[in-house]
Image 1 (cartoon, helix red, strand yellow):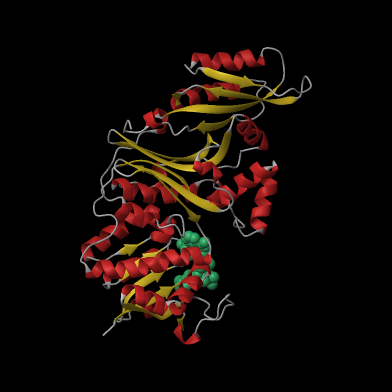
Image 2: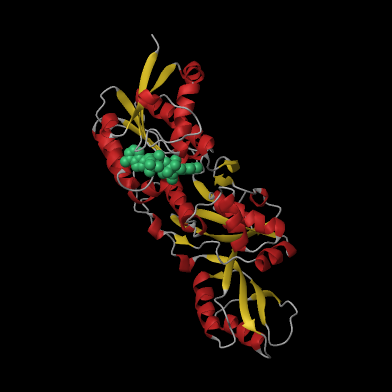
Length: 437
Ligand SMILES: NC(=O)c1ccc[n+]([C@@H]2O[C@H](COP(=O)([O-])OP(=O)(O)OC[C@H]3O[C@@H](n4cnc5c(N)ncnc54)[C@H](OP(=O)(O)O)[C@@H]3O)[C@@H](O)[C@H]2O)c1
């Protein structure tokens, strides 16, 4: 007799509607592939009757999530309401009642994940969170299963579609940030309040989860260095192009000698690198393991159906893993030492906005020299004397601490009219990693 698993869905908005559609329309496809009938038994949503792009059976709906949490036949609870509360309480209650949980809620897991994962471990239950990082790309499964035999030395992710769309449009058309942000909002690639996305926080939430999986690191987002894309201007993008580079918001994780560095910031990368070709709202993750070497994942990082695809794959995975008595994901959290941002080394692109006067350049380069930062090149676009002009400086490899101290001093100079823009440069050189080959 075919095994049956009953599923309860809490939250039927963008992603929830896609999940309900997939579970209902693809039930026999999934049964053929898994030998299990996954039955969507109940959907809880505050407004069952709201307009959705697909018609869902009204008999499945309830307004009260407790009707799912209290149903003894439901063994998998999918949380897709977002936010911290009541999502966290729903997940913990579901686990307490012996149900596996699936969520796409990166904000919740990044800051409260340890509590939720530990509760699941105590209870011998599963937490599926594939959709919380890079939407439809199965990166969580790849790290926790496909690369289980690897030490992972580097992860570079384009994991926020809004930022990637904005930077791609600025690169393609030379348009300013504000204009492109409005276009992104119109096209549905940016929220009305885009702060979490453009400020880099959403990418940092996802990086937190990647670090938990790769290293068992008990970190929260607060420990991650984050800079957003708000201050990137067409000048930066044009200059990057001139020297063969592209600007991307990267979430970076590097492990070396037992310490890890985690950071999210706009980064100049060689235009010849595969990540530089990832444009529009797409996501990509470059990951290097000591056995597998370099790998690259690409796909849609958000949207109703790509995200639903990942959620439904989790519904299947958590049910299967339970049968095999194996828990996927994170088993132990270690208090790992994070390399402080001060200690990282990089090459830097600096854009200093000045009122053009004699000796301006020598004072700026003098400060950099006093802080041990050696200059690779300087570029000053021609402008009328007296007007505000950018001075663009590329440095050789230096310490972040020194660069930050120097920039504080430079920004105090009377002829500097705006905060200096810093963009870190990544070359993906082999010697930066752990292995030599
Ligand atoms: N959208 C994406 O592309 C995407 C991609 C990856 C991950 N995610 C994550 O997926 C989750 C859901 O995102 P979404 O875009 O689908 O959000 P959404 O469209 O706002 O959907 C949330 C739904 O949950 C309902 N809801 C809120 N509180 C509830 C409660 N107490 N009980 C029952 N239903 C409740 C909401 O009703 P009301 O509308 O009436 O408030 C809404 O229908 C979030 O954690 C998000 O970060 C989304």
